Length: 258
Image (tube, rainbow, N blue to C red; front, side, top):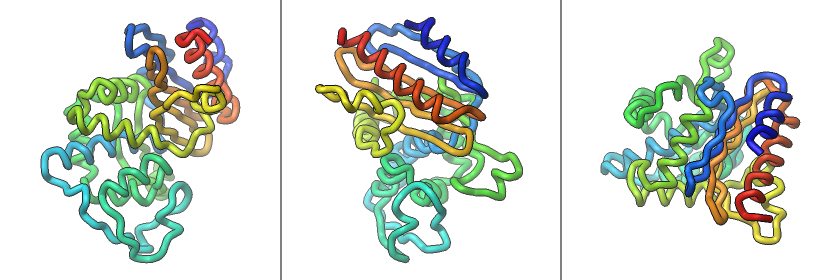
C-alpha cells in the first residue's frame, strides 16, 4: 500500500508531501516530509497550541472578552467578518472559530493577543525547526513581498502525535485541542469518503488552502488510530484533494479490515 501511495503522490504536479503513522503500532510512511511548505491555515494549529500554553501558565484567561472591530476583519474563511461591529467573543471562542471554521479574523486577533515573536518562541521550544509564523492571515502586502508562514508535513505530524499522547502543553490541554479539531466543519479532503461509511470514524483535523495550495492534516480514529498529513504547494488542488480522500479511505479500510 505504501508504494501505491507514493506512486499517486509522484503523479501530482508541483510540490507535495505526506506523512502517515499508526499511533498504536508506530508503523510509518512518508514522502518529502521535511520539505518546507507555505502553511496557509495549517499554521493555526501552532497558534492554537501557543494559546493553550499561555492559558495553562495562567497568563491568558480563556474567558476574557474580546471586542471585534470592523477594521480588524479580513475576508474569506470564517464568521466574524460577517457579524456585527463590536461583537464580543471570548478567547476560547476565537480559538474554536479559528480551527473549526478556519476563521482568519479570529486567528489574527489571537496573533495580536499572543504576539508573533512569542508564538514562534513556543514553536521553537517544542523542537520544531522549520515551522515559522511570519505574517498574519490575509496580509496581502507581506504575501506579495514573498513573506510567508511555513510548515512541514513531518513537524505537523509530530505536533498531532504530541497532542494524541497528551504531551502538547498538558494532558488536559491536548484533550481539549483534539476535541476542537473533531468539530472541524471543513470536511472535503481527508474525511470525504470516510464520512460516508456506515460507522463514520471520528476525525480531528485542520485544512489549509490558497491559490495552488491545499493541505489537510489530522488524526483518524478507528481500531488503530492513525495520523496523516497531506501538504501541497503549486499543485493541482482538486487532483491532490482527491488523492487525500482516496488514500485516507485506503488507510482506514486497511487498518479496520473493511
